[in-house]
Amino acid sequence: SDPDLVARARRARARLGDRAFVLGHHYQRDEVIEHADVTGDSFKLAKDAAARPEAEFIVFCGVHFMAESADILTSPDQAVVLPDLSAGCSMADMAAIGQVEDAWQVLEGAGLAETTVPVTYMNSSAAIKAFTGRHGGTVCTSSNAETALRWAFEQSGGLDGGGRVLFLPDQHLGRNTAVLALGLSLDDCVVYDPWKPGGGVDPQRLAGARMVLWRGHCSVHGRFTADAVEGYRRKIPGVTVVVHPECRHDVVTAADLVGSTEFIVQALERAEPGSEWVIGTELNLVKRLAGMHPDKKVHFLDRDVCYCSTMNRIDLPHLVWALESLADGRLVNRVQVDDETAHFARVALDRMLALPG
Ligand code: 13P
Ligand code: SF4
Figure 1 (tube, protein in one colour):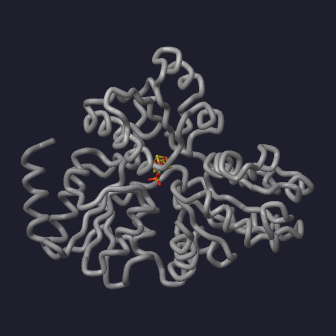
Figure 2 (tube, protein in one colour):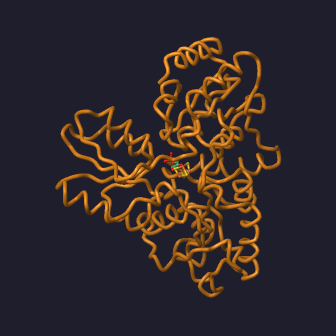
Figure 3 (cartoon, helix red, strand yellow):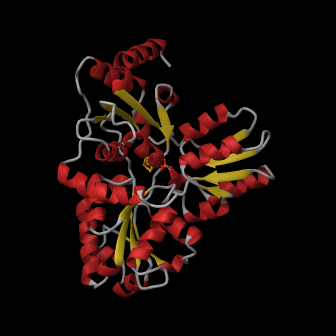
């Protein structure tokens, strides 16, 4: 990266000292990660942000929903800054609060709302987290989805009882966790399509379902295919395939290991020298892992380039601009959730943070 920008980032960091704390999600560019105080998956970063009450500025190098969650979990006199406010998440954008409220009405109309607990993936707006908090549900991330679902089923009347979970907005994480971790069947899951009347689900089918999956997905992880997994297995006998749970169900079942970005980072750290790996997640992270482990062979599951375009919007020029502005006394790009939304979103986030493990 441009040495002048690197020097400017370092100077601004030094001027800010402990007043600023910089978090970097694993999908961020190397040029950004270099300046992060901590890196992690979305669960670890939420906890890391909350554990820094002395920092005046939390500079979040990630996407909008992560910055919102950090704002909710930190104190009101701390400011969370997203270096480019247009860094959103296409999956989080697939569920609007009005659509979620409509879906709840459909469940109410069918007499099912009382036995349904909402669980929302971290990749959702603060308004949807607040909705979840108001209706007795919890947030989950890719690293605690199993525990969160078990908890939600206990609240709704038990896995074998008549209860169900409304899972937002990633159908794949919901389905993969329900089937592979909880032992439910594919038939226990229905997909609710917010663009169709009544979600496009027959009321009887809805009543019989254990998992009501929102029709949302990640455009990056949706590109990986089970064919690509099998292709690698034919080419490299003994290869280990690890994928993120946002991948489609057939991809996850074809893989050897499935887990969050932090899980993937740790799997590579523990791997034997000389071992070969195929990774199905965002390309910035896969390239970084290949560079960090020259004694292991790391392959990318997709043949084509597959960055998360919104994560990539945070680049070194944006980071330098944000840091220099803060050091000059200008609070820029603050992400702030209104008090009422923050209150109920925090209820759902706190339920997640209280889960065992
Ligand atoms: P992690 O929780 O694994 O960091 O995933 C966040 C994400 O956006 C993956 O696409
Ligand atoms: Fe959202 Fe997918 Fe990008 Fe993750 S990789 S931030 S889920 S669009």
